[in-house]
Length: 611
Image (cartoon, rainbow, N blue to C red; front, side, top):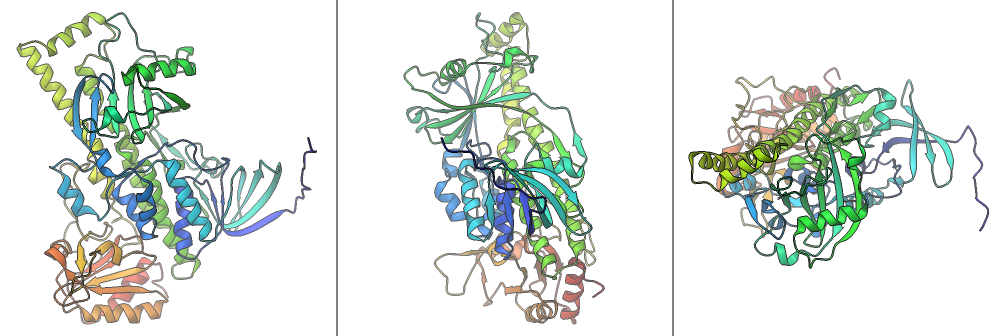
């Protein structure tokens, strides 16, 4: 063998860059992509040897996919993702091949909610495992000019009077060196070194236990198509512990997740209630994992190959703030939770999308550095909401487990409970009704359009509320399921289909008129003064403000009249939209000094009020 090569090292080895991202998962890699779309480049470092080898996050929801649509990645994602048609059910069953206890519609397929999903976005839910998403993002980042280095660990962070200095170690070259950067972004996951180094305080609630991921290859096409189609299956055996056979402590029940239809699966094993989560009983061999997987498949003829097994703790943690000086943290570094509701990677993408335009505008002198303070103010409350909802999603499954007697350690009691399901008695009727109600309660996990889309930035200085005379939108009774469609400042721009007077082959969504790194002003018939104001004020402030008129014989026709129903302003009013497609301000109708008003609004939002 050749001699090991150790490069010469010097304490003066310092790289300089404007932007340094630590972590190349969904948060870090997408941030690089979004910044590249603004013409900004830097370094993207990750301690891992490459992109994720295991699927981990997989649900890509409407809000997440909209951010990727903004930088022309939606088609690449859809080409690799499992379409929503394969996600239409979640099931509860004794084995994948055996008896089924219940099923519900999932991810927008329930006829009761389907219209709400179509009204919310031009995008649809897809199943895109992290193993497929990350390479798309890293490739896009490199095409945009970012340098990417894997096997590079962060060692230390030092905040300077201006900028940040970090020490890193290249684990391939066995070399340590320093990097000075204008801005540092901590996207390094649930064990974030950046968060520790800058001392971000964390709000921690008691964890909900330990879970075990077992990734396998097994062709289950004959079991799934056409009558068991779905990407999530709860598998459990209520009679275990009664029939003389005990479930392994680490594999009491499993959420079986489709990774690749229908040949690759993740068995997410949940520990038996009361098990010693740090004890030897949580250890198992590969052979024991495979034996339990085969039991829960329930078809002895299926060949199963173990690919990977790992454990993870179920957390409920959020950072009190997401930034300190010139360091910004995002993704799992600042919000840690189980995968229920599929909010994880989607929130990572939206953290990055929110931050990228602000950093870019500050670097270009279009906004004051004070704009960056709005990042924590806008995104930290979202983090609180999503960690709470994800853990509530797990807790929502407790009632059906209780109804089946699965949480009881007494075999006699469990025998009695299961017998009630089969009895023609008031007790049996109540037992069956309670089980149905408990299953229906879980649908907040699979139809969480409200928690996915209702982000509210109205307390942020980066929106303008001075012209709002009434209260904001009413809080829906069901905040998890119900999407609030509004143009109230600080809310997501509503989706509506528009088209040209002579219809083009494909309609355009209002969200596609906005975004793409620019402010956008939407008006209607009689709103020409707003469009002229956008041109003049944009030139004065060095901004590109795209402006469009929607309505009768305007730039775009209001297909189905959806925009007129959703805009909440008169046809000669306007809606100003930020580069991240959130409403910045709106005017009920045209005003005499449109230029002066628009300039006042933009200066306030961008922190240039004293210019």
